[in-house]
Amino acid sequence: MTRAFSAALFDLDGTLVDTEHLCNTTGVAACAALGVPVSDAFFEGLAGIHDAERVRLIAAHTGLPLDEQAFFDEWDRRTLARMEEGLELKPGARELLARLQAMALPLALVTSSRHGPAWAKLHGAGLSEVFARVVTVEDVAHAKPAPDPYLVAAQALGVAAADCVVFEDSDTGAMSAHKAGCTVVQIPDRSGQTGKNADIIAAGLLEGAAKVGLFTRSPA
Image (tube, rainbow, N blue to C red; front, side, top):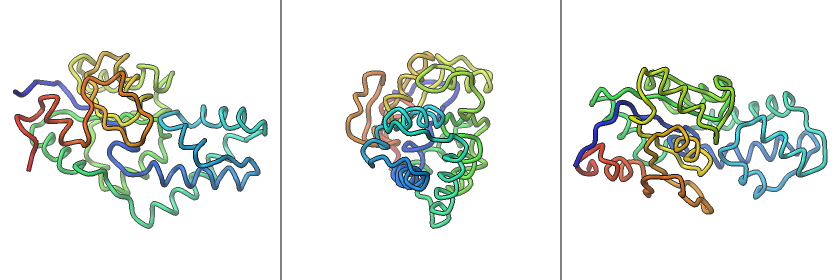
């Protein structure tokens, strides 16, 4: 049975593009280069948290000062260099987006990335023309897990948040969408995610779209 939604809203990292491991690796390397070493496991635990908060948590964890702009510059430099080697989409991402576009369903991107890195990832993945609106962490007063990012995206599309379906990978993002009143499809990208704020939990994007009623059945 299909369900009518007014719009579909997507997280970026770990949901549409396979950047989580890449960005974690370059983030750890950036910290080391600035003399503030952290473990891979610690940095991976910051998934879904916006970048300014990451800096605060890294400094608190290590007890060492970390200059926000210096970290951003070093992290971005290393990440962009790695992305030039190729950026993979998550399984089913291109198929799902194409199908939703064919349905003329408004699409927006809602990311905790900053504006520059977000657009670099979209260009690298060939998705720069897909979304009617792109909401980054720099466009909201309060980042995920606050509801602001998804409320801003819904408003930008001229629809009610309650009429939006959201695709997320992390508990942090799912909480943000849930608080905004959206229907949440969570596709966990790593272990340790509880899914407690998801309406649907699925192994992949196409499966999640079918379960939430966007399609009568999963596309072949």
